[in-house]
Image 1 (cartoon, rainbow, N blue to C red):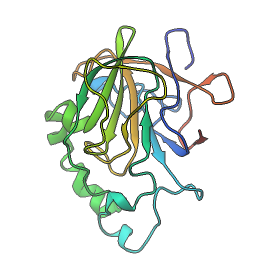
Image 2 (tube, rainbow, N blue to C red):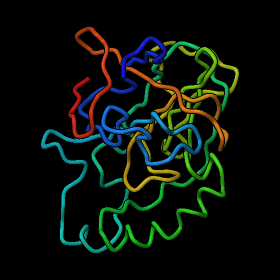
Image 3 (cartoon, one colour):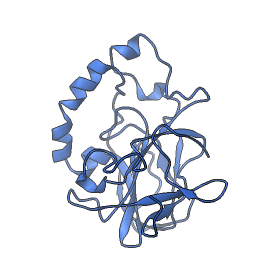
Image 4 (cartoon, rainbow, N blue to C red):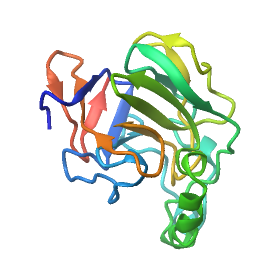
Length: 210
């Protein structure tokens, strides 16, 4: 997973994050090749206990406010230096869904989101040019995007905040490298720089401290 063709990225956040849907565990990582997601990876912000939000009786039977999650609003940083080529903001942060009942209802609307294209899937997002592809940072908090198309960013510049917009069941960050943001785009392998040195692709279930 760390071959010469993989695009090297810095971690786009600080704090503690849980890895989900990693290409180190399976490809396509999200179960589909659509929208260049074959090598995408998700990072869920968590607290010291490793949880994204406190579990309650209510969370088992209904939706939850995104503001109740510890990582909602955490800064999202540029993982590369380059030109911002696409920006989208204005999508609402919808209710989070950890309840099996809420997830079933959400799954029934998945096809409609796919038909809606990148804004419906990625929600609020920023895309940065890297080589022959783009790095996508998706599901940002509404109103949090700090950059504009055509702007040059450096590694570590804040581009937005963690949110729950688009195709997201709880606040998290979706990162991918792909040819474009089109439905037919090809995904490109990625690899991250370790805080202590070296390169790796985090595995599903891994906790990262940055």
